[in-house]
Image (cartoon, rainbow, N blue to C red; front, top):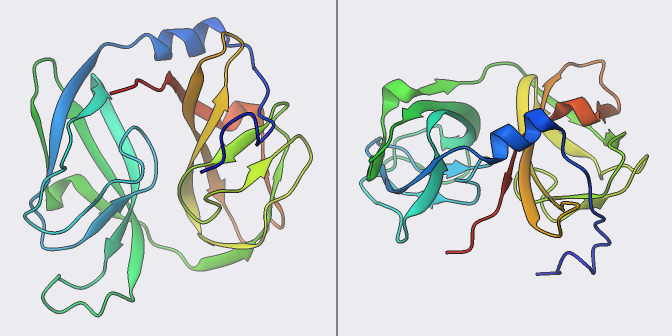
Length: 203
């Protein structure tokens, strides 16, 4: 994997509101998939985690206390019937509490995202360099006014996991949260779309 310097990611200053988000209290949990579907997390601290039904994460993961809403890819069919080719985006929502040791993924915490698929490129109007760490643009790095390759996005709410280096020299993870419509060609990313900035903790 290319390091941050090779990608040319430059430091960015944080506002007080962003700093408050970074300083949230954390807890360390094991994640368990209690659904009958394979699931893959696209953003938040859970980005990259993929679980089969009944399986748990091999390592514990640090999560902030409070509400977590993560975009996931969910196998449409139950695991026993799946051909592994049909996945849809959904939102996993739950509240993480102090002292929690296990995060159980339940069907009632998952909301499937409707809408059609839209093929489009994305234009970054964010005034610093970013790199995508999951989702349709994974591995792509953007500078101000540069554009992704064309990707397939679900109409409606979308969240994209990114990383960058802060002005303090630390690596940060954040989410770009936007609403996608059929008129967004290209889809534009603004600095105000960057949410949930947090320091990446070495485990």
